[in-house]
Length: 131
Image (tube, rainbow, N blue to C red; front, side):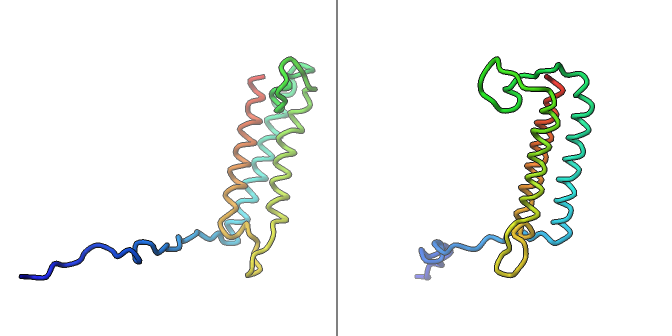
């Protein structure tokens, strides 16, 4: 009788966790991320300049994140709410902590969150056109 070949993994081999390769951003990628945040801020301010003259003096407070129905806030909030959030995102990336090797944590694959937050704030600012 011929011996049967073993093609499956042993329990020890199957239970070993392989480290997933995390993509590393270079310094150029880090700078491109900041430019994306800055462009998002400029686009938000341009949208605010365009939409502000068409807005009434008071806009619904639920647009700014308040949950109370019927309350209103001044229309100049289109210049404050999301652009200030964008500036906070910029400073979070600028003053991000450093890892063991001395590089900023935003350079080690975490900077894509800034781009997503920037796009999200810009999309929310776009909703001012529907007020």
